[in-house]
Amino acid sequence: MAFNSTDYLKPPFTSGLMDLTEEEILYVQSELKKIAADLGVEFFTYDILLAYCTPKRWQEGKWVNEETANYCFYYSTEEEVSLEEV
Image (cartoon, rainbow, N blue to C red; front, top):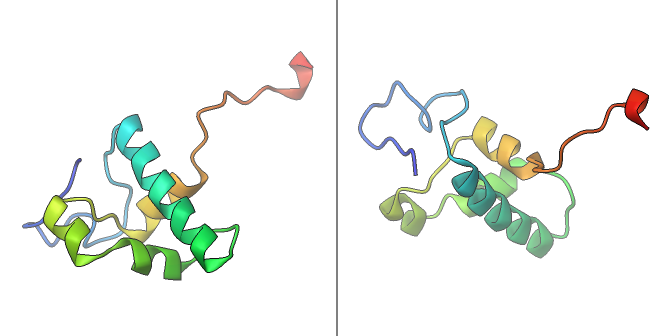
């Protein structure tokens, strides 16, 4: 996972999207969705990010910042179909 633990001027310590692969995005998304289900919400909240960023995930190099978490939460692999094609 594209994780930075030494440069405090780059994500996840600063704002901005992290450079994650699709596999990493889907992993983060699945974990965030599990937390959302446990909290009983259907949309991204800061509480979900706080629950995701555990010390264990820090050691594994899997922390993300808020922008990246929000992007991953709503990420869709389905291609959008324009209304003109329908």
